[in-house]
Image 1 (cartoon, rainbow over the protein chains, first blue to last red):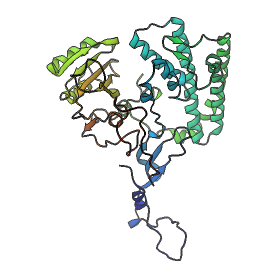
Image 2 (cartoon, rainbow over the protein chains, first blue to last red; image 1 turned 60 degrees about the vertical axis):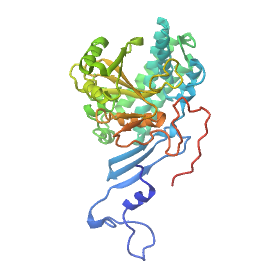
Image 3 (cartoon, helix red, strand yellow; image 1 turned 120 degrees about the vertical axis):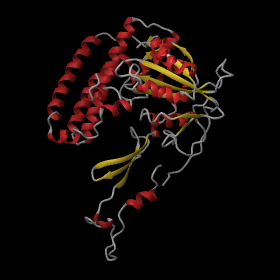
Image 4 (tube, rainbow over the protein chains, first blue to last red; image 1 turned 45 degrees about the vertical axis):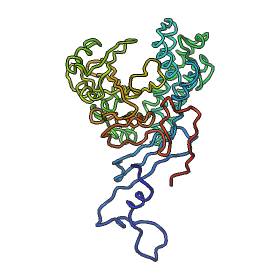
Amino acid sequence: MTPTPETTRASAPAAPSDPARRTQEFFLGEGVPEGGTENLVVNLGPSHPAMHGIVRIVTELDGEQVVKTDVEIGYLHRAFEKECEIGPYNAAMPYTDRLNYVSPLINNFGYCSAIEKLLGIQTTERCQYIRVIMSEISRICDHLTCVGASAMELGAFTVFLYMIKAREFLWELVEDVTGARLTISYGRVGGVKADLPDGFAEKASHAFKQTREVLDEVHRLLTGNRIFMDRMVGVGALSREETIGYAINGPLLRAVGVP
Amino acid sequence: MDGPDIFARLQEHFGAAVRATHADHDDHTLLVDLMALPDVLRFCRDDAPLRFDMLMDLTAVDYLTYPGREDSPRFEVVYHLYSVPHNHRVRIKAGVDEDEPVVPTAVGLWPIANWLEREVWDMFGLRFADHPDLRRLLLYEEFVGHPLRKDYPVSRRQPLIGPRN
């Protein structure tokens, strides 16, 4: 049940009793029955629909610890599945660009592989290589964004800038290959839209070298940084059972010791 | 275990409750009785040679307009299972009638089933018996109907609601 504003207010401390005091402010230990503490319900979001990643989280806090949350994730729901019911298979390709705004290529190729499996199409070896290379570049972009953004939430804005700079090196490669940065629509059932451009190999090795340099800088900024580690280590940690039970995979699953 | 062994193991334990099996496109699939579904899923998770400890996906299919299925139940609920220790997969399906679209919950087996079942309720209108908190997951409470049913028109408008507070 979503807490209504009434229940939210009811769990907040009662108003101060002194009528001479006119502002609504509370002093330590005041307004709490029998000197104990009460959990506080805080509503995070939703912010404006044009923001990225809009979500509403109703949290129950005990000090700085989150005790309980109720998450509303539907604000970004765009009914792609329903739209895909009409039109031919290839018409759904642009929708898959928009499923993840950092690594649209992977979604393109995932969708293509599913249809190829249904139709029994075998793609060429060159196409498979292109798909793997482009997916790996997208994956690195994704990790750069995620780590950079979580560092930014802790106030390490430099890390965010550096990592977005590195993502830019890789996105330039994506732009070279697909002609776009986000709405790429590069996958095709049975292949890809176009071959890799001339000089892609040299550009890619150069971009990887630059990205490695950035990672080295970020590594020196974050790993062993007291503030970063104190706020990250053990916070929201998941056990092996929880991770598997919630079907979480990727880096998080590897982090709990499942190879 | 590979697919045929998984079939054999489940057929040996559940006999006629396993209605059909197939391996189209190399995806090994069992069609089981809805009544037997909770036992089959629990067995899949707990049996040592199977040990399907991860519920990769839980979804449903609406076969309303599908040719050749006029006599079968309208819906099918679909479980995609994966085993981390054994690295094998299986897909389990069960038919659900339109008149009584109720499926036993799997929340006690895999916690992720909580949100997945809420999504299936939201999109297909299949209820999950004994689910602890069966609200819509993606859409809002005032939404009328279940949009991934085949008889829901793409262009239907929904009532606009104002801010809730």
